[in-house]
Amino acid sequence: MTTVVQLIRSDQLSDVAEYAYASTVPAGARTIFLAGSCPLDADGATVAVGDVRGQAAQCVANLRTALAAAGAGIEDLAQTRVLVASSRQEDLVAAWEVVRAAMGDHDVPSTLLGVTVLGYDDQLVEVEAIAAVAD
Image: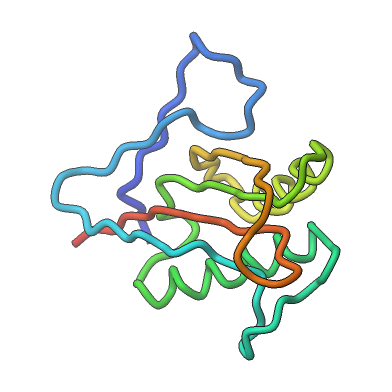
């Protein structure tokens, strides 16, 4: 499958970030706005309680399921936002490492945020995303 998402890099910006700084989607592409992917199992229970990495992995699994239902995959992501309910940088980094690894070569523009609380009991991680596919 060929993605319509074009990742953009600039040699005038630091290459320390593990993602492209921007992406574009051509006119006529179908844009997919995904709800925040949460670390919930099929029954709606929060998984991996107290485990940032485990919750990030479940978020990615649920994100892949939602993408597939929309006719897309990870390579079709145009942007992500990773939310971590923590003020500890190491927790944010732990979640990011899981999400980034799942992206493989598709280093989609991303934002990593520490937040005070998320919506479900015991929830530590949520991943928001926008994707695009040829229409």
